[in-house]
Every structure is written in structure tokens, then in C-alpha cells.
Length: 254
Image (cartoon, rainbow, N blue to C red):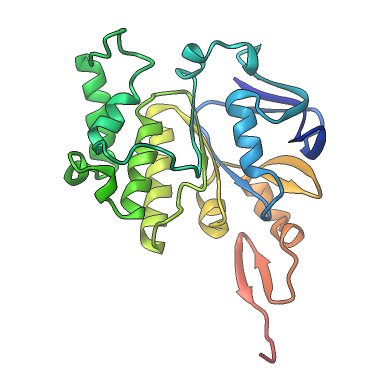
């Protein structure tokens, strides 16, 4: 199990967010990470993936500190999708996915029948069949985002961390992707933690919500999060009213 214990995250010994006590993420859960810009969502994801930016406390996986787990082992347990797209665009989508099976292939990088099945299942589930032999440089921003998401999924890790996975997608494809990702959790028994600004969609689909409030990291079921109308606290606004995870525009003279 992935566990945060009294975690402080930040830069150069200056904490930007912290949790009190422990937060444990069970298997097969779809968990939204919500907070205003700059509160530490991306920093926390990187911390959970490798221990980076951890100033105090611990991040552990199955009782062992993340920073003490060899990278070759950790890559079989945790995958991460960041907003950084620093990757060679000359390779194809299929080559990208094949490379992502590296934690499981032999030293020659040869794919087994199992590797190929994993890749082709993700390609089918996330509708990448028509794109699989195209170079990344030829893809639209939305198509590339789907390929990068697939790269994280083919690692077959128990925990998949995603920073703004719906970036570069239109409203229809944002909803479609989140539904597909939740289904992936249920079918394959994986846990996905994803940061997002698609709050209404996320709180409708998520099992649990990790949220940032006044420099504290808190964790609740999605049902309790909506029932207590926590969004009104996180995003106070003279223009918006929040209710059950949805917003409406307040009357204004504009």
C-alpha cells in the first residue's frame, strides 16, 4: 500500500504543503487531486513517485520508503505521467509503448507474448489503433496526450500517478478519458491518482478526493467531499456558487 506519513513537501527547505498523520491509498481506487494553482499538486505527485521534494515525514510503499526502493523495482510499482513532454518525437506510438515495457523485458529488450498482449489491450481500450504506427511528431496535442497516458498504463503498475491527464483534450474527450481511466482501475485492480481542474467531472467519477486547503493536504471519500461542500472553501468566488461538486454562475451586473 502507498502511504503518506506526516509529509511536508516543498523546495529548498521551505514547505508548501503538508499532511498530518497518515494517508493510505488502497488498491483499485480512482482518486482525484484538487487544489488551486500553486498549492503543490504536481510537487506531491513527484514526491509520491520518487521521494523528490520530500522535506519531512515519509512516503512508503508496502512498508518501505520510496527513496530506498531500487528504480528497476519501483518502475514495476509506480508509473507517472507528468506535464513535461521532453521525449523524442521521432519514434512511433508503438515504439513508445514498447519502450515502456522495459521494466519487464530482458536485457536485450525483447518483448514476450505477454508484453505484446498488454500493449495491444491498452491500444484497443484507449482507441490508439489508428495512431500506433505514426511518429509522435505527427500527432496533435490531444493525440500525443493519449499516447503518453497509454505509456503509463502499459507499465502495469499498481499505482499510476497522473498530472493533468485531460490536458489538450476537448470537453467530450476529457469526459471519455476519465471514464476510461476509472474503468481501467476497476477492471485491472489499479489505483490512479490524478490532478485535475475538471472538478465537476472528477468529483462525479472519483472514489476519493485528495485536496489542498490552506497548505494542508486532506483526504476524504468523494461522497463526503461533496456533502460538506468543500469546494466552496477551496475556491471562494464572487462569481461562482458550488453545490454537490457542480458550480453555477452567480448573478452579476457585468
